[in-house]
Amino acid sequence: METAPFSRARLRSTDARLHRSPFGLDPPQADASAAPSECFQCAGCGDVIGVYEPLVVACGDRSARTTSRAAEPDLRGSDGTYYHCECYLET
Image 1: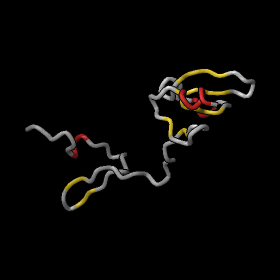
Image 2: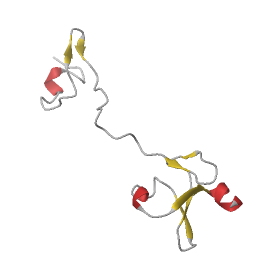
Image 3: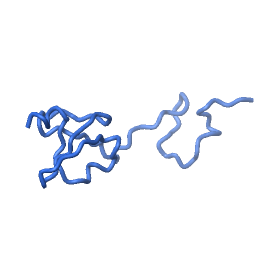
Image 4: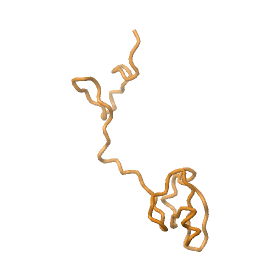
């Protein structure tokens, strides 16, 4: 007998996010204690800088470098001001 991909046999009892409903298992709900995803805002235009979008990190010592949030997941911890590449060129 084949089981469905989300059958009770395949679920771990430690997954507290799943609960039983009259219609079967409900999908996991968003955890209220989870922090919202961080968004980077451009200091030039105020728009959100996308994860794969190239951005410029301007540091206090008047240096700047180009990167992306995907290339550097820990970028939020660095000192600097974030710009879209086009916005940085306009400053």
